[in-house]
Length: 473
Image (cartoon, rainbow, N blue to C red; front, side, top):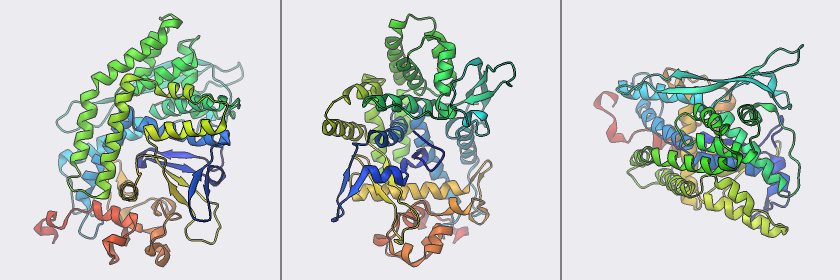
């Protein structure tokens, strides 16, 4: 489970799992010839990896995840038009009115509903106690209107806890992030219990909020039903509101009818939103007409999503089934089954952090387990895409994209995300540039065949030479 110190994490926007040194060293073993093997005999360390992998799985097998992926790529396509020929965003380059409204709408959605964790200042982030909830209500807000489209709305669950007579009531909110963390926490608990291990007592927020809401609405609900209800909600365009509706409907059903009802409802949602999912993926793929590593990596993720959505239509709560199949007394069989499961549904790239302070310039390592990034070509494409999206994020504001010269991000955020994992010549020659302004690597003459991930990402984001109009020449 996650601790207050450096912990495992999943960066949804970049499809990347990060493992801290204490976890990475216990899972990945590199022999004298550089061959990597995976050791999952330490089940508690494997639990860290499993938790983050679950986040990735939900990124590539739910409507909520599909939108997160497709919207980032669409935002990147709009950002390209802000760059000049040097690869920098400039005020003089403006987006169309429609593109500007699309960027503002997408950013607002991600801030209000999708990717930003709530309750950051809440006492619940320092507590490990279970909650006794007093009230739950859905609060719905309008998103900035996309030009030519109807106003879209997003919801959040506003909750109030019961306290003792001398305690003040605590209010908290639950959006998609808290739902996702709640599912991952509950599945990690089940994962650890396969080997009879007790989970660490984690913080109430964000990990225990989902469970608390479910038990408030349905007092006798079982954990599998909580997971099923939450997964079903993620297959809709408003997970918080759908979750509350599902829980209220579940409270009226007999215990032995609930899981079957949830499975059927999940299939209904997948069918209802099927054309939306296909359309979003088709539109994403069309943004990459040229065959090159980054486009191929995007297409590979789209292929994985389609396959996983198809499997969910057959088995809506495939996480519960996979946990049943992981049971074995034999450690080697257990390890092989876990690796097979992760490879079957695909696994994000894994950034294995090394202890800081080592003399070598190359500290961290990037690994993968099965697809995507199963080849050097696709791995380069995935790293290139990550870099391009990192460059985009540095420019994103509530009003759209700022100029590169106006970037206000911290030094840590501006640093190349692969600063400690890069073995390219530029990293050795110009560590200052890589740490402070990696986008300027585009100005350094480099053979494209030997360029680093970040330079390749910025170069791919800049429009082709022929797309610059006469006024920009």
